[in-house]
Length: 46
Image (cartoon, rainbow, N blue to C red; front, side, top):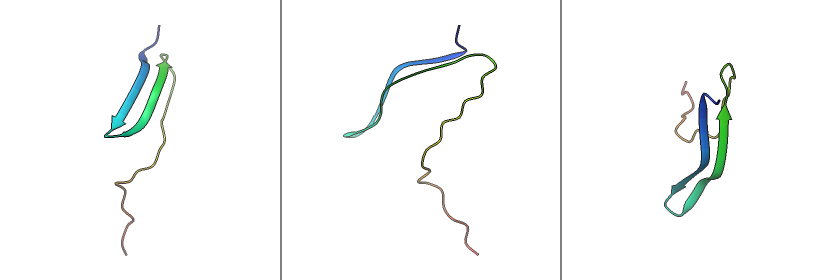
């Protein structure tokens, strides 16, 4: 049995489909990370 399970996830922002029909199951003891762009990140100024 999965500790966390997502089934057929879709995420829309207006007319943009950012995530389309994604399923994911995370079992106990697994380490999972999702990487993507971070548009809010700002470079450090010197």
